[in-house]
Length: 236
Image (cartoon, rainbow, N blue to C red; front, side):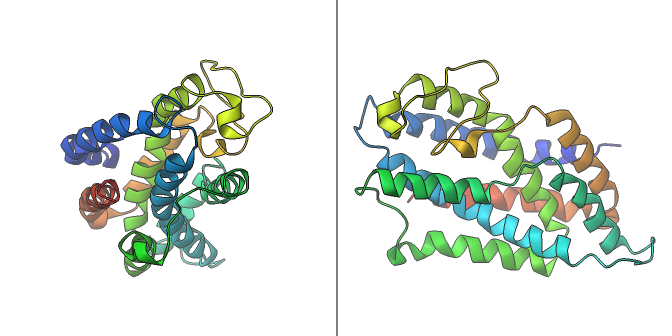
């Protein structure tokens, strides 16, 4: 029987390829060959950042709600407890996003970040929070899709950010060499700094998926909604 990762991958195969293709086409437009400022990059990062902020805010709230001494056969609490192990992997992006965007705003005053006029983008954060808090098992789809993006397509992005720019472009005294692992990125690239823990991450997602029971299919369906939100961001 297929595990939840296999089910999600099958469901999102086509939309993932479509979104990934557009992202790879857009990223060079944010870099030195097309612009002298990382302002466009900052805008794109702040847009996608709304999705990470949304689901990580909900994740923090749910994890904080776990009650000590809850019955072991409580499926809801068992699911949340199984997700707590994800926190030990230090995958959270919210602080990194805040730090990166703050650095970029101080370095360049010409950045076009999200404003009140971008309510259709900023509302995504609230939408994600509400949907997850309504049905907590939806969190699993967001965690898998959004963090998998760092392990998979994110590697290509990291290479492009380093190889197609220089340290002056990012306002840095020095820029790390494009090593194979590309770790320890400073501001404003710390969002892309991720450990090689993909195997352990997948194991935890599969374990959490088992605790969902009959709700597992909705988690799979929610993964498709995530790519619908990504499409809206790309039309910004």
